[in-house]
Image (cartoon, rainbow, N blue to C red; front, side):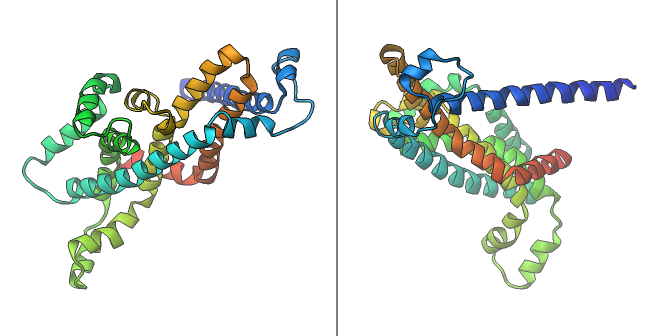
Length: 278
């Protein structure tokens, strides 16, 4: 056995154990969410529920306001992802296809944007949103999310646009298509694998983001799902209603699991192609 093959086997063993651990966590969350309050304290954490009921999910959705938090997260995540992909794709097209003076400096600025830790810009962003009257606003949170995620998207998409042959643009110009139409109808669809990978990464990042939502949202009717679960956890520590908390956690996991299950191939293809082109 060579050192390389041995290293690969160790990597597969580690990844397999890590996957099993995460799978068991999800199973534990869903099993606990279906237990009654008394059953939760009387039985083992890994014991299956006596009866599969959805009472905890209903209480979490209405009494725990998970439904409102879910809608807020869906709005912020959806709008942020669409705007971020469109703006990033346009910027990446310019950087990847059009030579101009200072292009390297612009690319360097985008790369530096990926290196800034979020906690370093919380206070400046708070001041900016306050001056724009966007504190306690979901639209203000959308603006923050788009801003912090654009550098990574531009970095990935630029390599895809740079690798596309120029014949597509030349054929479109001969047919009389404008540069804007050429971009939206020909060039942008060709980067669909990269767009799909970026979309999944963005959705996961926005859906689970905690710090900015905690600082910028003070109105409890506008909280996103991670912050809502945080307050629900605090309430469970005093009321003992842990099953409602687990039901809320299960609800928050369902969209992410469905997303990865439905678009796993597109995500893997986009990441692998991006790795080759980078």
